[in-house]
Length: 257
Image (cartoon, rainbow, N blue to C red; front, side, top):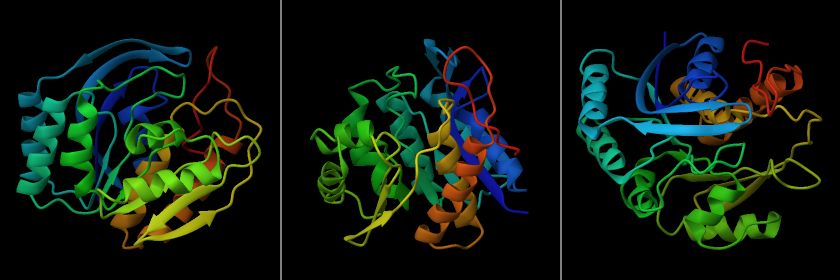
């Protein structure tokens, strides 16, 4: 059985964060483990509070996992301050971690800001270079590239800027495009567009977490980056399209559809 690790924040309402990641791992019949970076008070309507764990405790969680059950792939989500980012990067290098997927969670689906602005440079310099693939949405690509990203042309420009400081693949997700859900995948300087249709379902809480976790599963199973993403997107489309409707705001997906 493949072993998957999520390094991310906790969503008490179960739709995003480590809860979404572990559900995704289980749906793919893999063994899921978690290192929690932050605790959030959130639901389908938004985030009301965040408590970061100490960098020291995050490091101890990583030691506990890597020294006993070495993960075949790692998904990294919410890392809200620079001290935590530095600890994670140091431990990943120390243990020679492989198949790393970084979802730079800066803004929640509800629009809530989840990352300290001071942590952006640390994320870019310390953590993103370790990734096999990063998966920013259009808002996050704007932050990483320093340009406004509103359309497909902007997505291409942003990806090329981001590629200047990381060697891994870059997936700029197009879920916020007006007329399509096309995604841009840049690998080794080559841009590939993966077409997708918008699904009529407002319940998209945790889509980014779910997609990046599914990519990690597929990498652990030996797929290349592009195939890992394509298969992960198929799973995500099914989870959204199932039409689960929970909560008063943007509800979660059905990970076990």
